[in-house]
Image 1 (tube, helix red, strand yellow):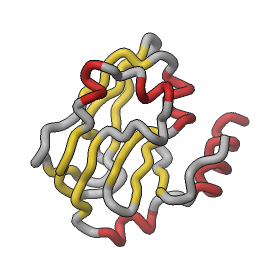
Image 2 (tube, rainbow, N blue to C red; image 1 turned 60 degrees about the vertical axis):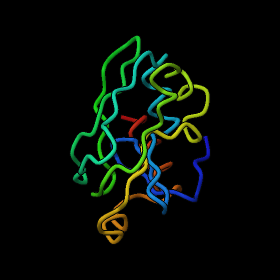
Image 3 (spheres, rainbow, N blue to C red; image 1 turned 45 degrees about the horizontal axis):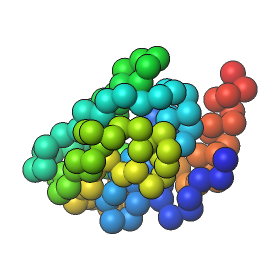
Length: 126
């Protein structure tokens, strides 16, 4: 799998674009299996980098979602409430939330696409 280079990645398998769009990676949805429910925050919620902002429930497990940056939620992908399987179909296209990033420099600590691919392959080797 090659990961889009227009975004940064977390070691918890979320991605964020420069404009603050957030989702989970193909690796995350592949590991989870069929996603049946997504719980997301309301618009206006303040997020802190590294803290949970919601959950993804699959047929296998419930997993926390972690904020890739601090900021305020400006939009929520409401379509996922009735069609959470969109994340399985296109993890890098089915965004979850959009945030107004408080401190863009925080994103410098995140992984580039090649670094994330290396991280995933090393994680799979263990």
